[in-house]
Amino acid sequence: MAFHNILGKRGEDEAAKFLIKTGYTILERSWKWKHLEIDIIAQKGGFLVVVEVKSRSSVQHADPDDLLSKHKLKCLYDITERYMDVTQCNLEVRYDLITVIDHGETVSIEHIEEAFYPFMS
Image 1 (cartoon, rainbow, N blue to C red):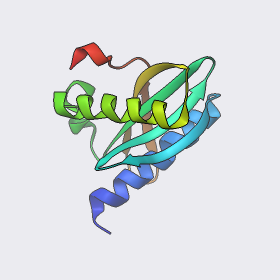
Image 2: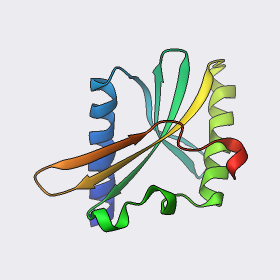
Image 3: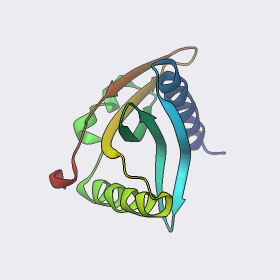
């Protein structure tokens, strides 16, 4: 497996552990539809929380403003709509971003709630 795939998998695992520890219920991981994927779908309170996870091996490449293109956001909104249709979910949706910086033995996690909105794309 390529390094970026290993890094991404570890980042998603760490993000899921973090969410569980902070009171979220994980509903899905790596939910796919066509060529699109949602990293983590969770629930907390009355929200369905769609989480995009970005893993980096260096803090220099972790600026959240640089991590998601308009195209990526549009794809995320499209697949969220599909998930809502398939599961007949009627919760309010919130889009969060988790950045995971892998320091080797440890990781740093930053969780940004309401990181983006559909009208931002």
